[in-house]
Image (cartoon, rainbow, N blue to C red; front, side, top):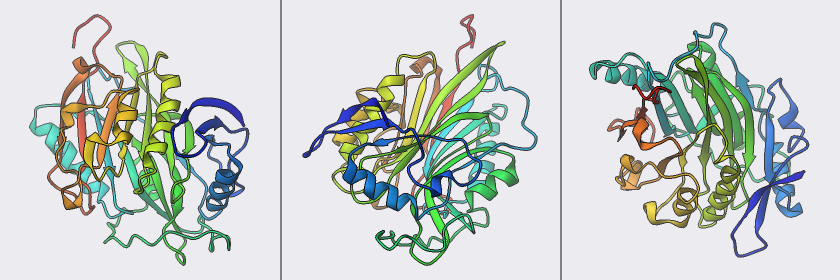
Length: 339
């Protein structure tokens, strides 16, 4: 692995993210998805992360059979969502129908949509029948699943672009895994899995480049979906991700990070401050509850300027999840200054 990123603070030796020369385990190489990998290089962490990697299926990067013509984000606008779907409990189709109707009611043509998902669910033979004997599988999230809960099948059925990188199994017995995903009506490329420092479970963020048009010119956005551990060590994971994001901060493409940071103490937590110091937090989304127990767990961060934003809301309906979707509306400024 070649060193690439800034170290993360912690009580032990600082964790440094590296770009991997190869996937983290044999299971990650199955399938046809072209995915780059980043992660810690520490031998103890690598042993845990790679063993857990063998318990899940390969990443999924899927392209719709009929992709729509290039979208002008200065004309159509863009809706960005971060949402923890509770192991497939969130009804994606019902949410997307609501989003379409909600924007139409505001007098807006259907915008492009990017959904940054956490606890996305995938089942079937692509997931190993058993985990390695030295891996303690996480408990099963047994939400009341929607008919469209399998993220790979949903993307295929709806003609959306998908980048899904599983973090962990969904229980011991079933051939199921869960993790972060990016679901988009815009093309995805340059997909990467980012293994975060080990705290209590394997956590993998997913990063992809999203392409559109801005007037007649190509337009690119780098997006990351992340789900931090629910233990106090999540601040080390956030610092590591912030270090990686810092490398991309000043290139030509704006950055967008969305996710469930598991901040039981809200936006004042170190995990939020570390990311905010590199990629500014979208404060228009507020500090109110985004999940069960009236907790604020879900955030968006972006280098897109405030002049692009047309409002952010935490949707009242959970659509079957235990988190509310957070929706940011964007209208990217034209090169001639007209919006």
